[in-house]
Image (tube, rainbow over all chains, first blue to last red):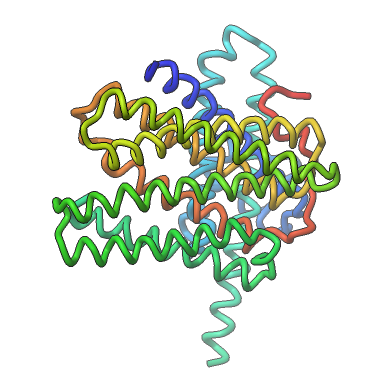
Length: 132
Length: 231
């Protein structure tokens, strides 16, 4: 009985986690990226999964905002899950390749939007310090 | 949950619970999600109460155990009621409030009776056994109800971003705790689970605080995008 409950709960956890991450991404996808971040992150038109690691490295260079910490980690975990699916299940089901690629690109876009916010936040902090 | 890390998670959890209420008040969402905010407030007060009892009697005392398990059952019931209010939000245009409430009470009473039945047959410690069994069963019932609610959100094309994120984070919380309880039953000697519940106890208020702080109450999104299976 415990095994059955565990399997059901784990399946539900996975589904809720994926949907939650997609809701975080969907909330940020409408926000346009500044030209500056596009240049810095190397995203001229469409964000690709290949750029994710670079954008995360850039994010680590900026002072983080406490309320975004958990969400970057969630998206990072989601990105790793997508990589895992791409290297395992997607080999058996080719349709998953397109889907994981699209999702990985959206993860990158989410990270780039967060980078944009952090840069703006750092600028505000600096301006406040200069004013003070 | 002894030790430095245990205290850290404890205080962090309590601080995050307060931050949910503060964020909701700051963004004028307190009354809209009254039950969720009251749950967080109640949870914070019980964290303070637990710390007081722990300080007075010690972690291994029977007083602390009774207080911990009783307050945990109360919190689970409160969270169950908070989940029902999310149902009321989703179904508010269908005028089925009365039926949702009735079904929720019947389900809660049924779960309590089932838990009592299980404990009566197998345990000598009736009170702690009952509250532990009730919490465990309510987490699973909560998980099933959240899953049904998520299905209803997708079916009804509910598009309020804040409501969707509140429901999904609750789903993650319930499923993680239900999986944790099941694992505890499968491997009762593993110490690894000690920190799991408090850590997930921190993640829920973090997700709710974010939903209140960052998302406008009237922000919308296309729900079809969120389904794991494309629609």
